[in-house]
Image (tube, rainbow, N blue to C red; front, side):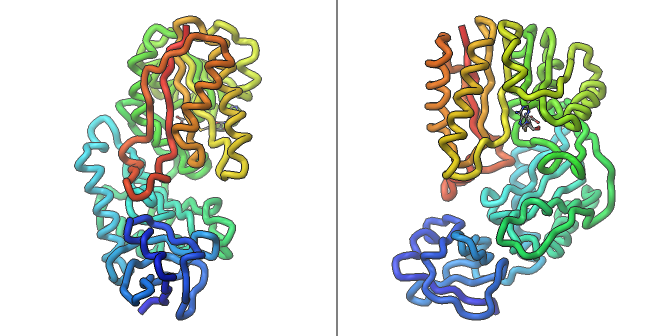
Length: 390
Ligand code: SAH
């Protein structure tokens, strides 16, 4: 039915451990017409079926989507998406306070490269490999089946994410229905999400839980939210009773929406600045007693990891030096290749350089709608710390 890949003897172990990637060096034989994105069935050296996956010509040769020898049809996608939806329903992630979340998180939900974000019935489809992209028609049908009348539109935002091996060009656009930007509610806080023009899928859903945690600390404080994007942390801090909140981002369009979000939530103690965080921090000594550092991934590859570490250390040392005594620092890294222990060590180095007395209050991570599995620890990318700085 599908093209066939046979592994070298001894290379079956990674599939048996349920790791969703197979590297090209593990392959002994390819049979059938296999191109970038083809569905392939993988067999062990003894001829036993192991898994079904999507072929790629890079170092990851197969991305596993099933450990059962089934047809990859609409029913397959209905099953996958229904499982992901049910998981989030069981955890109560969508409720009367929150109507947005990540609906499908790639390997964490069993399909490498498939991301679906849910914004109050509007779904953003984002494929990170051509295999998933080629199957989008079935995924659309499955979404209609699983979400039923809750589904309002589906927007494909894969133009920049298909990867360097993709020959096919993708144009962003609606696969179902139509919509302008939508206003969503997250923990009773309102946000305007412009998924067509905004970064990633329009909003950083992965900070929902950490934003809520900020509410415990922000009351009465002078809060600086750097790398604010559309003001996620800022609006929560202001709602929690911060004395004042300042947002900083280099992107003028993000700051526009940030101001709209402040208005949408009736804030009066918020101000936003279009600026580079490193410049902004330079002359603000002692002006804030709560700072959030949530920079973009400083690296996506191991080759540039060292430079990224230098960047994280410099940024954190700057913030530690200028925060008021008794201040609270929320600091994050979303670089997958910087694991949490490397990040914690980097923060230790920054603390030493700052000369301040630093205590660790809490460790933070990604929320359950961005699930990490025991089989794929690489799926853990977001880590953070809350620090007390004397
Ligand atoms: N904390 C945000 C998400 C941050 S994403 C939230 O909760 O929604 C990272 C942001 O950093 C992006 O908006 C990007 O425009 C911004 N950015 C990147 N480099 C920057 C820099 N040097 N100074 C300020 N902002 C920067």
